[in-house]
Amino acid sequence: MSHLAKVFIFIGVLFILFGIFTWIFGGLFSWFGKLPGDIRIEKENFAFYAPITSMILVSIILNIIFYIIQKIWFKQ
Image (cartoon, helix red, strand yellow):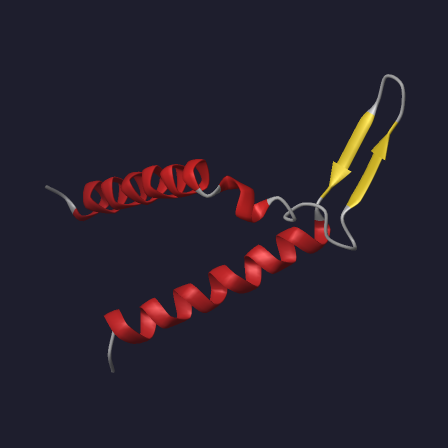
C-alpha cells in the first residue's frame, strides 16, 4: 500500500474517533463558538457567523499538537 493511502486511512480514523468523542462528550464543548471575538449577526431572514476567536484557538492547539508529533516522530 502506498504511503499516501496510509495517510488517508489514518486521517479517516482520526475523524471517526473525533466524531465519536464529540458525540459522547458533546456537552463539554458547548462554550466553543461563543467566545468573545466570535461574530454573530442574526436578523429575520439573514444569519452571519464568523468564529474568529474559536478558529484562532483551534489553530494554536493544532500547531502545538503537530509540533509535538514532529518532534516525537522525526527525531533529529
